[in-house]
Length: 285
Image (cartoon, rainbow, N blue to C red):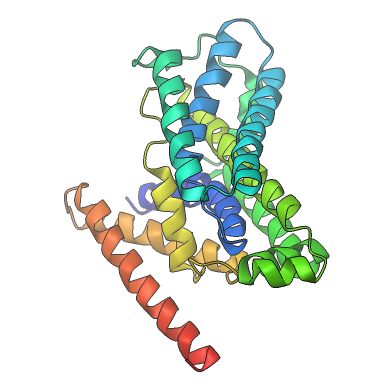
């Protein structure tokens, strides 16, 4: 029972957490991406359809990761060039990509005909307990953490989200930063979809639905500021752990699963209130 609960927690932390890390950087940069769940599902669907059509697994994965990144870049391009709020642009992207998932799967379950050993690099388990996906998550978190807190680009992200006008006057390439973050968030959503596909070996029309809300919750619970300019990778990692603990606790308490979303919404509200109050006190408002 304990091992099963731990595995369930690690699965949620790693698969959703990978996407949450990319969304965190985008939120620090002052933007949102509501399409990550649909990109997740579309990536899994495209990968399995290509493998079933005879395309080598490694090529399918590369194509899917590139496609996911391009989707993010296109959405980012609309945001920075046309000035349309990212909430609206990515909401449209969410609906469009979800429609593609429904069309590609014909609203049913699609199973991988020939399960390639290549996908084991995303789903292999050590001793039937720790999945290699955990190391994908840790590696991603370390790399993005170093970029955010130890590089000039990381400083640009904070500056872009904190004050876009001041950042431009300081020489920060704001548009380029935002484009990069949009591409990164969607690319990591594709990676999350591939990781989950490797575990199930199938995909359905609802794959990835509502994930965007879970990953935003991870970031907010971890202290990420909704208006941008503040947040951390470590905070999102802790937010992912807390989210997994809440979900697992409700399961162990035999609380119906549909209460999880209600409790999640309440937790986000509390986290936002605490976050906002702390920030106001910090700046002396």
